[in-house]
Image (cartoon, rainbow over all chains, first blue to last red; front, side):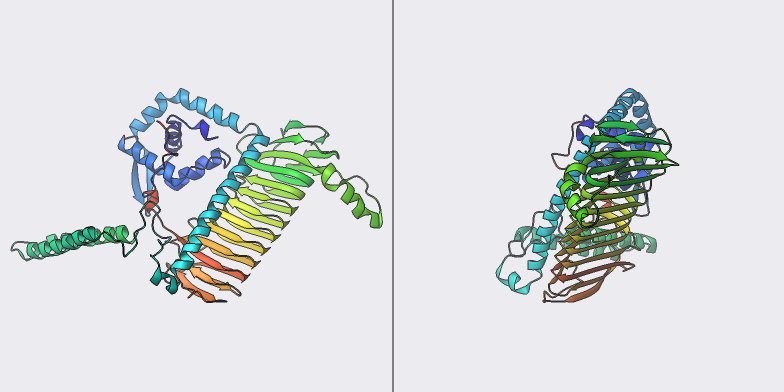
Length: 216
Length: 287
């Protein structure tokens, strides 16, 4: 099924969906899923970077609404869409063909769900084991800390005792430098109240960012 | 009004409009798929006993014709001799997305995909698979697992003996019950006023919710431990414990009840609108 989407066709299809109206990432995933009768449900990890790339190329742009990014097609995007109209028609036919044989489709659906469900079960079982042992005080003292399930999978698990001392010291020094510098600048003559308020906003947003970064 | 009697594999295109699907099979494999195309029925394996496909008054009905069985006490013997073997049929049906569907299968597997309307599945023995369904979903299974992926709406699943596994569920109301079997639920993006109720008599419950969910949580393991990855909700790892707590503002409800088994509440990190999710090498397609 996924063979239908190769060589940038997913991108073309995303453009087509966005041409029908602005949508957020989650909506796009649901629409793709419906189009493929649930058989092709791309993950957020597939869709989102692709949208970002398309945005960088100027084919779409986004507006933040209610905490979610809503994507919209641009003129350049429409131009590409009309330029590749033939390809799009071909893709549509293929999609139709791929769902034409219901019996095979049913088999595929069953297999795909069984596979995904197996993966989910395995993932959750491992996470549950980790949570169980991490929450048990006896385990923590003698053994290195298990990575908490909350940490993003792409972050390398950092055991607290094996932390890179150099990096931590660097960070502390940078923080000290920052606060010193800010104090010095703020005490300077000729700084208006509005400027100070703007500086406060910058610091608090940096703090939010750091919280997000360091808490994982 | 059109009616077909099926004795060999065939494919039927339904010309009438279908606004309700009613399937009743004694044994076999059944799949119902919501599409934007015209409704059709495909029978790839016909059973020895006749199968009737009927379209009348907007109702598409597919059912087994049951011949006269032996009388009285001999009836179970007849079913034992004939049941599964001679009734097994392989039926696939495509209907418009918004077709309310009622499915009853005695023994065999049921697959339902992208049905965005009321869906009722009754299955005595067999595997039930739901994919991308959205609406009021009721599934009752006596013996067999239920697997659901990417579903939303109002979902109620029940099995006596079998596992229930749910992935990417964004349902407003979810109720899953099993007597004997594990219950695994990976919940995605539950709405703020969601109501989630999971119950098992003998089996483990594993739940994963997003870390930004708003849920008031009540976990009760009569003979088991409760573990949680949320710092505010801690089971202290004791045997036979009941834990209450709140995630976020606590507007939704999550209740899990296990009589003999552990409960684990896990936390799914949220990427800011997916931003942290990098594509893996396998997912990256050439452009």
